[in-house]
Length: 181
Image 1 (spheres, rainbow, N blue to C red):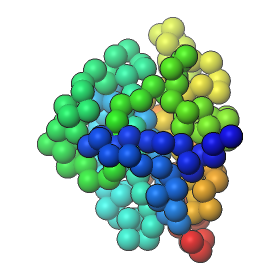
Image 2: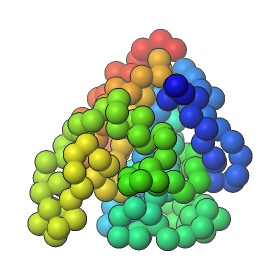
Image 3: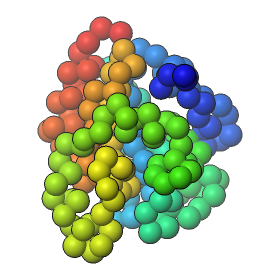
Image 4: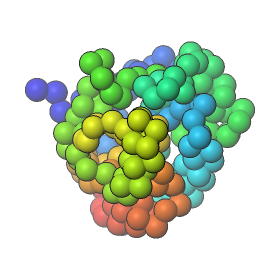
């Protein structure tokens, strides 16, 4: 069985990557979308990356078009949007599916490791009121976040509306960054 660290990933520039290549870093994995009400979170994610990168944080963005077609672009269009609109410098990956029959193995492994998300109640209720809610433990929407510690273990999962500056997320990241590599 392939470990989480060894799942093959494709960077948005076409290069090949794995989480193992980021060994010793604290990872914040986020499924992103360019045409979502939560898209402004790119700015907060980039600021978080800039502020904590030297301490060992990597933000990894995975574009996904699973929710109302909110990421319709090609990898090149997504990369251009991220660079020109939000000056994104953190690593971006090729568009993947985070839900459904074609779910990327990374997301299947992340969900299996951390089936519950912090802060999801209110957001799930809002989506349900619009008949849009997914079934737990599936990815709820764009901008759901997973934290992987320096040891490679999934340590936390956060609802899409938990922003990059939310104290609950920041405290988990800071605790993981304080641990030795």
